[in-house]
Length: 304
Image (cartoon, rainbow, N blue to C red; front, side):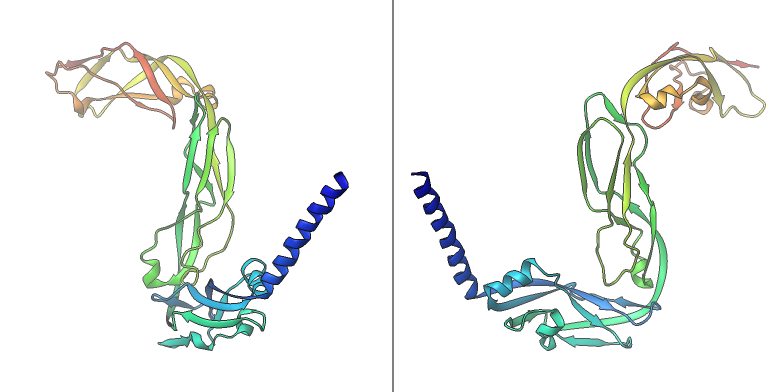
């Protein structure tokens, strides 16, 4: 019984192979997107204007050849510019299998667009920022204890002056990380947009997330500074110290001392006759917040 079952399964398997071989020998028509790559003779020039970054091709060929093109080879069409001229036009009807690396049995039915028009200008360089496209979430009881850090933070790009004037930054590819409970470093890269218009070094970008456990910490007798007191005015603040209850990342709070925590009251915000509650302000490290403070009431004594 087992032997008969094995023979039956083998028969079905071989049937599929023969059916696939026959099917792939037949001709099919597909639509293929082929990236366009522009190669300039000198770094002093840059491509300008609107032109397609991809060609849409309709191809007819045996299944085997189409399978190879679609899944087993890198497809792109390269235009090599010998001399930049004011108006360069390339007719896509001149594209052949040899230029694309296609097998000889592939027939190119149509290519869109029919014309590729290019213009050129002097190239310039500019240093711009990289910004992360980042979606993240943290486990309960954890925070991001410092700003998101990128290495490198900026990159030099080269292109036409007209284009560079419109670009201040480039994004990374979107990164998604969730339920984080420890620091992480993620490697990504800049989104390859405007590939024929911009030239820049294709280097990896590392994104660092300083994830820390949330803890509380008490600081006692933190000095309160009185700022923006007019010259010649004698003002006394009572009391001049405050106790703080802080919440933040475990490593940040572990290194935080009273003398590195700035608490102040801005005299400009309170008139001499004001009886409103005087509230201190806090200058704290990233991710640290004040849960509570004591005393709640402060008084300004102005000496005549």
